[in-house]
Structure formats: structure tokens, C-alpha cells
Amino acid sequence: MPDIKHFDPDATLDTVVRLFWQRGVATTGVQDIVTATGLNRSSLYATFGGKQELYLAALRRYLEQRSQPMFRRLTEDERGLPAIAEFFDGLIKARCSGEYARWGCMVSNAHAGAENSDPGVRAILDRHHQELRDAMYAALVTAEAEGQLAAGADPGAAADLLALLAYGVNLRSRAGADAEALHRTVSAALESIGRPAAA
Picture 1 (cartoon, helix red, strand yellow):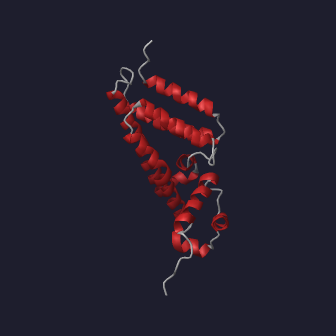
Picture 2: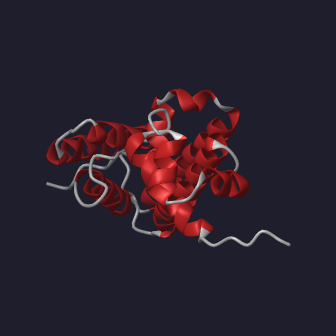
């Protein structure tokens, strides 16, 4: 007889994403996962594998459902620097208020944790970084075409800077940084690469 699953693997994975995202992988045990999902260990292992496989699946799920939609919106937006400013406004709002306030970003949290020594985790982190950087670059190329960048500003270097700034917002917000302070930092970064407004 085939094994019939009496639970929704997608819903279970969503629960596990929230657990790892909020608590981190190092401090989340298998029993925590069992308690949060209401499943027994054998069902979890049969469906997802061990804790590490479950974490990798959760990290991929986070990338696909939370990070990539933001990157796509930024890439497809044709406003240039205003699109980047809006990206950061949304990021700061998500990190400092609402249901997931002070959780940081699951990917940024993984960058800062011991789990980044795992090759599978590192591959996901590298993919996330490349997609974030590429989205920033696309918006900056648009900004350059629209005459929004300061003379001599390099879209490639600026994309690297802004990608790192996004990680900084994620990590500092998790540590309790004030939203207004984060907004000031982002504004200063954007002003450093943008063309000064006409007097």
C-alpha cells in the first residue's frame, strides 16, 4: 500500500519557514519542529529528510516566496532611483513593524550564522545575493538612462553597495535599530549616487 500523507506539506513547510526565520536554525531542534507542525518525526523525515534538509527546503521557500517577488518588482520597475527608494522603504517597514518585525531576513540571518558553512546553504545565499545585486543593477541602469545618477557614478559599484546596505538593514533591524535611523542611512546612500536636485 502506498503511504498516504494526511497533512499538507506546503503548509507544514510554511510553518517551518517561520520557525527557522524567527528562531534560527541553531536554536531550533527537531522537537520544536514537531511541536510547531503537530507532526511526528517519522512523517517529517519521510517527507523532508532530516533537519538540515528541512532547513534547506525552508530557505529555498523563503527565497522563492519572499525575496524573489521583491527582486522582480525592482527589476521590472522603470522609475530608477525612486524604485530603489521604494524597495528600501518597504524593506524597513517589513523589518521594523508588523507580524515579522525584528525577525530580520531569513537569508541575512543565515549569512550571519554558522549554517553558512554548509555548501547547500551557501549556494542558496550566493543565489540570493546575485539576484538582489542584479535587481539593484537593473534599476540603476534605468536611473543612469534617466539622468538620475551623479556624474561618474558606476551602476555596478552602486549595485554592490546597495545590496550590502540591504543586508545591513536586515541585520540591524533584527538587533532593534530604529526605523528612522535606517531611513536616514538609506537616504544618505542614495544621495551619494544620485544627481543633486536643481536649486
